Image (cartoon, rainbow, N blue to C red; front, side, top):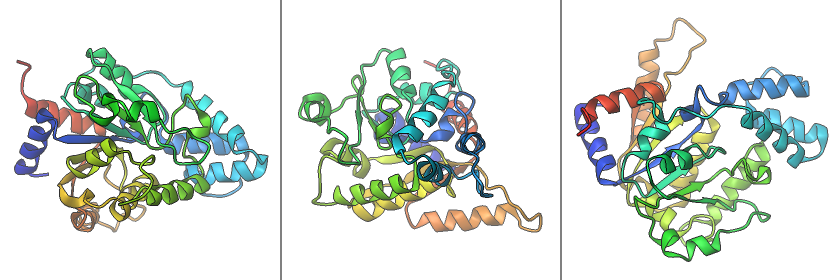
Length: 296
C-alpha cells in the first residue's frame, strides 16, 4: 500500500465511509488459528488424510464419521469457547481499534462476539444478527424492520455474522457442505433475490462503502468463497476500492521469490479493486495507529 492508499483508508475510517470484514486472523492470540483448530480436531477425530490443516474437509469427514453435523459443530464451538478474550485496550488489538471509529456496520465470518464486546467497551450499543444461510435459521425480522436495522448508526452499529455464531452451533458455516449451501444462499440474495440473506442495510454497507478485510488469507477458502461470491451476486461490490490485510504466503520451494509471488497476487486482486497490506493484523494495526497520530 502506498501513501495515497493509506491516506484514503484513514479518511474513510474516520468519516465512517468504510465497512470492516473480520476473519479468524483478527483473533490470533485469543483463539486458535484455523489451521491449529483443524489439526486439533483432526487428531481428536482420527482424521486419516494428509490435509489435516483444512478445517472444512476435516469437519466434513467428522460429519460422515459420526452422522450428525450438529454434534460436530458443538465440539468445534466448545473448543473455541475454551479460548480467552482479547485485551481490547491493547493499542494493536484489531477489535478494539476498529471500535474507536464511527462505523455503522461490521461484517464478520467469525463465530465469536469479540467485536460486540469491544464496541460496548467504548460506550456504543451494537445490535447483532446472524445470516439465515440455511432454512433452519431465523431471520432477524424485528431488528431489520426497526430503525436500528434499517439505518444503523455509529453509536448503535450493526454486526452481521455471515457464518454464524457460537451462541447457536447450528448456525455456523463449517463443513464443505455448509460452504456450498452458504454460496447457494448468497446467490439467492443477489440483485433481486432473497433480502433476508443480505438485508438492505447490509447490501448498502457492501456496495456504497469501501471494505476493509482483516484476518483473512488470499489462499484461504473462506476469503475466496466470500469475496468472489459477493462479486458474482451483489451488483456494485467492486464500485469502491477495498483493502485486505494478508499474511505473506509461506512457500515450499526456496527457489521461489516470495516478492514475485506477492506481485502476482497483487496483480490478480487488482482486478477486484483490492489493495493489499502484506503483514499480520497486529502489524496493520501498528501502522494504522502510527498514521493516526497521538490521541487528541
